[in-house]
Every structure is written in C-alpha cells, then in structure tokens.
Amino acid sequence: MTETAIRVDGMRAYPQGELFLLTRGEDGFDALVYNTTGCGPCPDEEFAAIDVEALAAEQGCDLVWKNPRRFWMMDALTIDLVGEPATFGGVPFNLVARMHMPAGFDPGRDQSALAYRPTQIHRNSVYEFVAGKPVHLLRSPDEVTWVMQTFTDHAAHDLTEATLPSLGEKLALPEGWRFRTVTLPQDLVITTTGLANIVPDDLANMYQGLIDGVGNIDPWT
Image 1: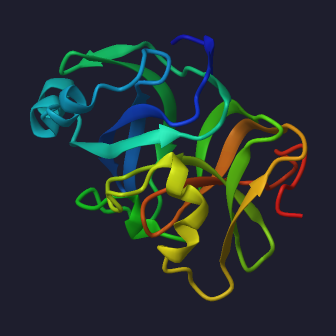
Image 2: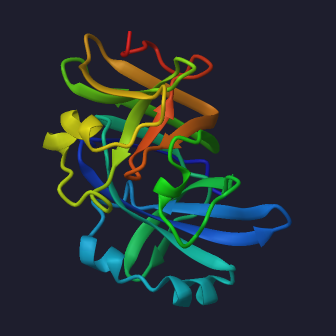
C-alpha cells in the first residue's frame, strides 16, 4: 500500500472520473474508490467507454459503479492515496478511498438517489478555496454549511461553472435546506483527517460539511 499524498493546483472545473469497485457484504457494499485526479483531466469519451461489467469480472469484485463524470470546484487539492494506481479501459486512476457505501445505496442510480442525506467517507484531504472566488453552499436545517466540492452535468445538461450561482433555482430543496453562492472574503481551507461528511443534492452535485472544525471559516456566516 502506498502512503503518498498528491497535490494538484488549478482544480476549478477540472474534469474527473471515478469508479467504485464494490464487494457485497452482510450489510451492504464495501468499495475501493478510484479517481483520475493526479493523472490528468478525465477524458470524456474514454471514461464513458469503460465497460463496468467486464471490469468487475476482470477485477474479481461483485460490481463496478461508475460515478458520472464531474468537475472539482476547489482551487487546489491535496489527498492521500490509499493503494496503488491502476489503469482501467486505458484510463489511469489513483486509489483515493476505501469506504462502506451508505444505507440505501443503489448501484443502478447516481448519487442524487441519496440527495440531502448526509453520509461519511474515509479519506485524508485538504481542499483550498482562494479568497475573492465564489463558493457554492448548502445550509441544512441543523445550521451546518456544506461546501460544493464537485458538480456534474449528468442530470442537468446545461449546468456549467458559470451557471452555478443560479443552481438554487434548479434544486428541489427539502424544507429547511437553503442554497447560496458567496464570494470568499479570505481563503477557505477544509482539512479532513479520517472522516469526511458529505451530501449530494438532487442533481448529484456533491458537498462537504463544515463539521467538527474541518474548515477554518464558515463562508455562510
């Protein structure tokens, strides 16, 4: 197992692809999470062409779930790798996390199936968002701020970095949830050591929660 940390700059709207190699257990799926980050921008056509059934047979796992291609939204990312890199369908990946999939996970659907249901993932990472740039936020009924880490145009095909400030008009927010875009007055740094709290919205965009002191500021306030 490698314990290498990688840092990548220039991450805003940086395309990445992710594969979950799933093994079925007594209470759900355990996953090896492979991501193209650190291997260059994810090639759209090559990633789409990866045959998940053939890959599962090749790797000896029960299923492979392909997370729709998405785009990072921090300015710089540092993440620990948890195993050796691999190449699938000609596309290079890093092994970035090991996790138990949340209750209700359906490999036949994207992450919007778990919209507004917080869960956790094991990883060590540092997300850096630069002062003067926008961040896109959810606020949950318990007054937790959730910072967008990735967006995808998989569900909303017209969604781009430029249209994110109006995303709240597209979301079916549950009662008590709010969305807003804020220009950062200072750098925001989210440091995760062990467990990250994450939540998707109903268009499968993903956010990290500012829980247990992981963020140096709360941009909502």
